[in-house]
Amino acid sequence: MRALCWTGAGRVAVRQVPDPELRNGHDAIVRVRLSSTCGGDLPLLAGRAPYLADGDVLGHEFLGEVVAVGPQVHRHRVGDRVVVSSTVACGSCWQCRSGAPWCCDNGNLVPEASELAYGQAVPGAFGRPTAAGGFAGGHAEYVRVPYADVGAYGIPEPVSDERALFAADAAPAGWLAAELGGVHPGAVVAVWGAGAVGQLTARAASLLGADRVIILDPLEDRLRMARRHTAAETVDPRHADIPAELRERTGGRGPDICVEAVGPAWDGRPRSLAGRFTGAAERPRAVYEAVHSCRKGGTVVVLGEFTGQVDAFPLDAVGAKGLRVRGARPHGAGQVPTLLERMARDELRTEHLATHRLPLEEGARGYALFRDRRDGCVRAVFSPDLPPAG
Amino acid sequence: MLARLAGARPRVNPADLHTGAPPAGGWEVVTINRPPNEVLPGGRRPEPLRRLGRAIQVDVWPAPAGRGTELAARIRPGATLPGLAAHVAGDDPARVVRTALRQAKQFAETGEVLRADRSPIDRGLAG
Image (cartoon, rainbow over all chains, first blue to last red; front, side):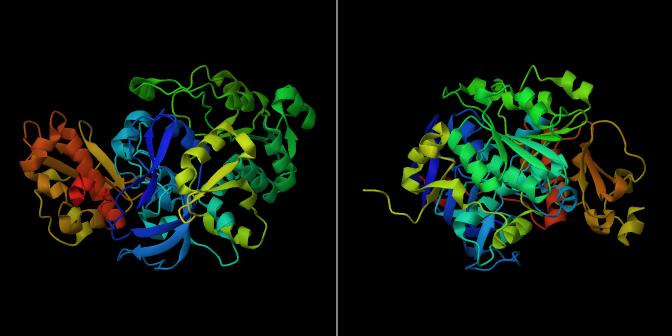
């Protein structure tokens, strides 16, 4: 089959790779109809993540049609249209049963890698390095989906592919951020980043009853899109003193909940292998600003996946202001069905985020547009069914 | 206690099993979201721990707050892992025990051990 593979720092290419096989009774094979770029891919693309190898297939946000199921799959059958959660979770361990599938104990093939990095094994995800327990990604014609009864969700008929696609990762990430932040009626929420995840965080906050939602982003086209589709207020940080602006808009208190949805910055420079394992991340400016701006006793949610360690973190502010700081890896279990229902009721619209639809063969161009935020690109979406240009 | 839990006579050496307070010293431990009698059915060690034979000690006790069962294993002092395990272990025998515990946990919780995709070489597609 054809798949968009990482081929070195800053490079991807479509290659012929073996078709996936059913390897466990809980597996399904999905024929991909759409897959999306995501900010979490950029450090991988740049060659900044340890363990990524030539030939690893990228893409963790995808949907498609079930073409084969293992004998232990009971919720899906061949022909079902499904969207697949980005993180692999078993649904049976204590973490999954406790409502935290993003902390699953059994979804990683090489737990030693994350144990070394984080002290605990974290679940694998599609489109992540296979040497670190990840699974081949969705920028391909077919994908193997482990624990398919848990991670794949049937799509209600009225929901289009273009809308349902973002139920795989961006919408659950936004919803999770709002939930972890404790958004409640009357809350004031600030979101750093007006990309897909930032916009869907803002929308989730509105649906959960937030009184005001403020999005910060330096790109005017994204701010315009956010105003149109989320009804949030917008701030261009290039023209504002952010803490002062947020104090002014919140009666001097600061936002109750601050969400970092910017993700890692990328300066375009690849790292050495040693640097990939040991190097510090770029300074997460948005996290610093969120900690600084948040009201006393408020909550800061960090959604970005930072491939490195961050020093000079304002821990003194966290203590002095009594903040709660939450991190989260998005996973849809428990959220995806609700999100799909909201999509079916037209409460949650996401198709506008797919600003560029391209054949798989134009994966390199799509990632370049997305990485450089050129041509108004919010998300480049690939379809293996689209014929290559020319 | 295991015999009571399992309703059957343990098939492992009772000296290997312990159901009191968690012991200290060199144990690898996993928490399995299943009751003890499912973790050690009939008092038998689950695979793949069983394959490590007498080289390891196994222990089990209920996890707090309804989290299931804590299953522990460690290599006996001076023991040598059997067969292929000895080659896999290299200079870190505890790694074999950790892997075996994880696989036992996965099997008890999900009914199977998660398998990686086959490589092109395994499929005969290389070259």
